[in-house]
Every structure is written in C-alpha cells, then in structure tokens.
Image 1: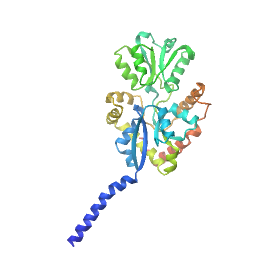
Image 2: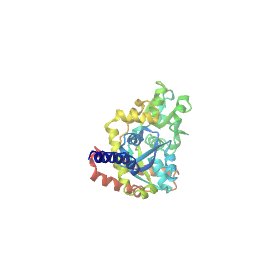
Image 3: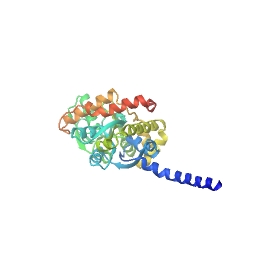
Image 4: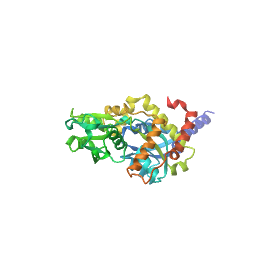
Length: 328
C-alpha cells in the first residue's frame, strides 16, 4: 500500500511538474511594441507585474522610439500590439494600415507644453512672433502651437518652425539654436533642469489637445485570436488601474525601462491620467487632430474618426458592463 501511495505521489508530482510548462504553452504569445515614453507606462508595468500573464498572455516587450515606428512594426507583423499617439494613429487610419484601436492607454494634454529661453523675452504667446521654435511636424505639440498662435491673433507663419524630435529639441534650446521648444514630458522638465534657471514653461497645452494615445492591435492578430481581444483590453485596463493606485512603484519600474531617474517619470505622472475611456473632450480632440493633419497635408484627405473607433467603443461597452471595478 505504501508502495502504491509513493508511486501515486511521484506520478502526481510529475503531473505538477508538467503543469507549469503546459500552462506556459497555453498562454498566447504577443510581441508588444512599447514606446520609450512615460505615457505608455501601463504597458511595461503591466508586463513586469504579470498582469498580462494573468489574462493569458506571454508578452515580449519590443522597445520602439516613435509612433511612426510603431505603425510600421504593426503593419509589417513585427509587433502584434502597440501604442500609438493620436496623430500617428490618425495617419495610419488615413492610409489604411491594418490595425485597430481598442482602448486609450493614457490621457493628459498638459504633458505637452512650450518651454522658452528666458533671454528670448517670451512672456506671453504674443511674444512668440518672429521666434524660432523647435517642434515635431504633425504632432500634438505642433497642433497645440497652431492653436496658441491663433488665440494670440498671430498668423501661422508668424514663427519660424524648426523641425525636431522629442529627443533632440532640448539640445537645440540649450545651445541657443532656437528660442523655444514645443515638446512633451519628461523632456520639458529635463531640459528646464539642464538650463538651470535659464528656461521656463510658457504654457501647457492641455486645453488645446489630448495627450496619451491609443492601444492598437493588428488585424492579423485579432483575426487569429478573436476570443482574446477583450482579455487584452481588460489586462490593459487593470494595468492602468495598477499604475493609478501605485504611482511610486510604477514610476520606479517605468524609469528602469526609460533609463532615467524615477523622479523624472513622477513629473510625467503629474500631468498624465491612465484612464482608458474616451470622454467628450477626447473625442472632440481626436477629430480636431484629424482635421489639422488634413489641413497640413499630412494625410491625403479629411477623415471622420467614428468608424475607426467602432471596435474600441464595442469593447469599452462590454468591459464597462463586465468589469466596472477596473475603472476605479
């Protein structure tokens, strides 16, 4: 009897040993393109804290530099999921790239702002006239800058735009090559600190544009895993909730990914909200962005965003009914 019991125990033990790898094999493999910006913290934090694994995903994080790169990775099948800024996503929709949005990953237009050199004498938006401003073309800061100029009664060509990216515009300001930069956090704060009192924030752009962006899933992956799309979104919602409720630890994890000090990420967290639901301001801002990109000839023609948000609205309605606690 003891022999039988021992043999049964060994078999049971062997079964347990086999259960681990089997369970791992049951998880759906995902290549997740994550931009190196604090706004996408919920993606990396959710992967690190095992939240996506909890919902049945084996996630491989692929660091990406820009929304354009994210679009290309999704379209080429190099990534299954990614996050895209509002502008790069609208460009993708206008050009028919094969992926859809299923959620917001963050909000916060005040993560964008205009930082000015104090010696340039810019005390108000009207003072931007004739100044050189570093700004990435076709982005939320570029759109916000246009709206700021319009409110100040200045024509669009009243400033000298110097095309830049978020990573190099700070050095342009430090060196004096430009008088101001229209950028985002944490680059605004990093540049302001580097200039040691010689630069200041003229204004934040939250009243003009929405920050953050959209959680994107390739059509190919969604077609191959139709029953897991809602789980992917639920995992993101829970990851966002975890960031909201554990900001100190989330900042430390994201800082590890970005290779910066945690306090820099904490600065970004002050102007970002990890809220997945599209509210009225966000919907209006999305359409305004699409109109702006058409005016700038950055997309072939104006588009209406409602059809492109159908998948997002459907999943949002389902999760609000099934998992309302994730919005707390």
